[in-house]
Every structure is written in C-alpha cells, then in structure tokens.
Image: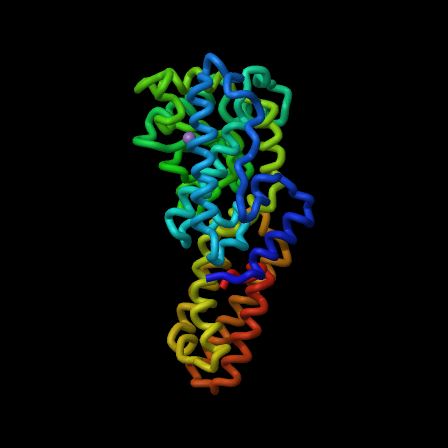
Length: 342
Ligand code: MN3
C-alpha cells in the first residue's frame, strides 16, 4: 500500500532536476499525444492505413480504457511512471492500458525516414561501444522481436548500471514495470503486435522488423538516451531492484508499524530475522548510485542497532524500550530508503 507522500516525493524529485519529459510526468486524465507526422509519413515502411488504425483506434483505446480504469480510484493521483513502476500491485486493466499508452507514445516518436544513425552522438557512441556496430544492434532487436511469442515489444533500454541492453516484453509490458525481468528506461521500442504490421506484411514479422529498424529516428533515440541517463526514474528503479534493501524493508515494515500501534509481538518474534536481514544488506552489493559513505555508515549503524535490539529481545526488555529502539532503527533506515511507500 502507499500514500500520497510517495507521489509527492517523485513529483518533487522530478521538479528538482527539471525532468520535464511530458510523457513520464503525465497524470490522469491521460491524453492521446498528437502524432508527430502524417499517416503516410513512413510509407513504404508503414502504410498509411496501418498507421491511421494503429494510432487513432488502438492507441486511442488504450488512453480511453486507462482513464476509465483509473477514474475514481487512488491511482488518479499517480503519474504514468508510477502506474508502471507499481504495475504489479495494480489492476491488470490499468497495467495493460498504461503500458499501451506509454509504449505507443514512445513508438511514434522514435520513427522517421529522415533521422539516420549518427555514430558521433551520445547514443551512437554507446551503441558502437556496447554492441560493436549498428548492424549488430539491429540483429539483436530483430531477434528479440521475432522470437517474442504472441504480442509484445522489442526494446533498447538503459539499465540501472547505465548500460544499453536489448530485451523483449509480452503484451504491453515494458522495462519500467516492476513485473519486468529486465528493468531500466526504454529509449527505443518496436511494436510486434500483429496490428502493427499485418495489413502490409501479413504473417512476415521478420520482414516488418527489418524494414522498421531502418526507419528509426536516431535523433529522438539520442534524446531519450541522454534523458534516461540523468533520470530520477532510473535511480528509483535502481533502488527498487536492490533486493537486500527490499527484503530488509519487508521485515522493518512488518515489525515497526505494529509497534507504533503498541503491538511488540512481531519484533519479539522476528528480531533474529531483523538482524540477519540487516547483515545481508551490509554484506550485499550496494547499487552504484547509493554507494556513498553516508549510506554505508547508515547500514553499519543499522546492523549495530539490530544486534542491540536482538539482545534486548533475548533479555525480555519491556515494550517501551523495545519500541524506542525500533523507532531509532526505523529513522536510520529512512536515511537509506527515503520516503516509505506504506
Ligand atoms: Mn500497437
């Protein structure tokens, strides 16, 4: 569960760094973005009829269904980023349509017949450095799209280590989503749903992929790439994928919040586990952005405190002292975790 403080924290974070990517910062009611070109602009790679149906029917339906699903729910206060970040907790209708809206909005923007690959740009250097050449990247994207069973997407995305990587996703999922096995910020996407190519290419998904990979707007991809590198969303994903932190967080939430209501039974039962999870946090790999002297010190303090807390439980300390100690540890934890989502 979560409260508005989390939304507020993200909003402030976005404001603070001047991250104004219109798509990510979007809130309910969501709107169909204007198509940045005419329906026939990508002929002969994408025929005008496919483009018109894809944009004005399919994408428009994702936006409409998303708004209908969100209306009157707590998710009215979520940004589009948050709907994807916490997709696993949300209604499947919201997950599918939020993904559909985000994915198609990016897709229209990264297509063009007039903005070829430039090895001198930031993304150009990263593509060459990571994959060896544009051709190697195209082969990987082609394979990712061709081997995705059923409907889905092929992705080029920035990982939490700020590297480029390729993956595919089913349905309308994408790497921002918490349910995705590959996490990061997408910079290029290819729709491999049949509705994206069937009129012109019929069942020949490989032909469609080869053609569309030659119709990428590399200026737009470069912009997506440089924005992704500095995006607070990437740091959020980095934190969310810090396994030892979320495991510790689970024990903290399950013991501290009952103690606030005067129930010390959970911490009395779980103080050993609490200490073990704090030690796991200390010995595990700290993600790059969080690997600072301050956070390392907080983790050390947390382990020391968890040890003391465990000793107090073993010596059957009274509720008041246990509650005080747990409160101190919760404060320390928050210097690592930032604002809680519960
Ligand atoms: Mn589509």
